[in-house]
Image 1 (cartoon, one colour):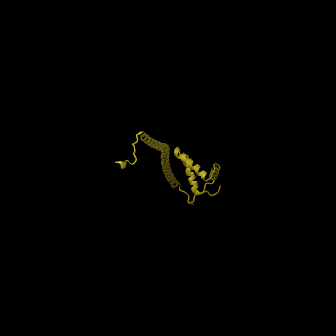
Image 2 (image 1 turned 90 degrees about the vertical axis):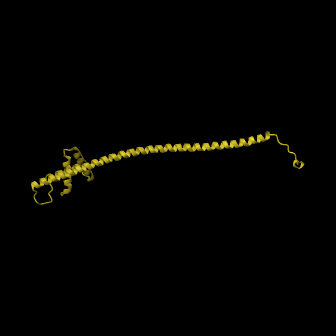
Image 3 (image 1 turned 30 degrees about the horizontal axis):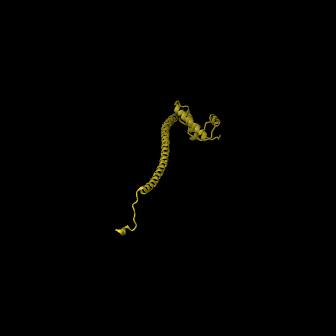
Length: 180
């Protein structure tokens, strides 16, 4: 590990560790998961973190200011910082809860839309099958009507010929017009 530690990283790490030891389980679990995520993102193993603590314990990093800290001012500033950080953690927890509720609502909406899509797809398939059945029935109906018309025409012509063949023919006398 390097000899100089980033004070911001050290402060973030200490804040997270302080939250891990909090009495409120929701905050400590959230801080623990944040610590895990930060360690995974920075590729820090548990052994490396242990080595960091053993390096810090005998030689804590020096503060940026060279003036000696006043005990009372430090305590009130630390208490103020702790209160600010707790307020920040509360706000982040509230935001996390809101986002969790929004995520649940979006997932429920997604599930209902998927169900509606499935029902719409089923209705479309049924409509297509009915359309195909109707189209095939229309072709059969037109074919049947055409056959009936053809048979009707043939029967009509045959019936007319039969009628004319059975009716007695008028005698036709040649040049009968001139005889009268």
